Length: 157
Image (cartoon, rainbow, N blue to C red; front, top):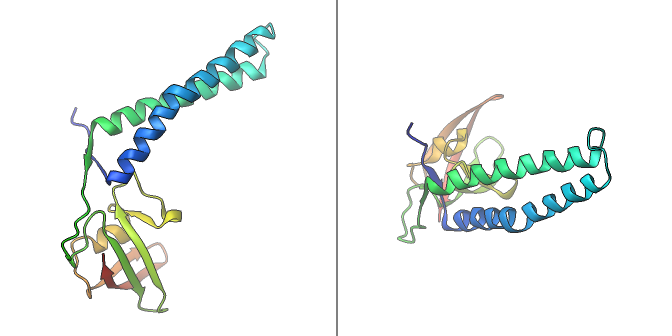
């Protein structure tokens, strides 16, 4: 089975590596200690502390497996500082909503790093896929559930 390549910025790679290390070295120990304490309470068949700790352990182990797989299949993209005005992964892009005039600033990243609350949008999102490969000054139309939105690419940095 061919595994999907995960596109990351250098910062995203470091962030995932740090999360993985924290899960392996800190969280695993913490949850193991919680399980041990819960077992010390006695009968584990009706012990909610034990059940909670085991559920957390399963979550942590699943997340570790996911991160391991993501990092194995990661392709790190470097920031291009060549003055390019073409939208590419890792670029900071300022868009202007042509209907309301609002300006929005996003960094275009791979889906593993996407965090709209932190203004990091995926290249696979509707806006990301509409702007990637376009030039500064281009107008793009994005299909959203509420209809179509037109954005002008004000700058690419």
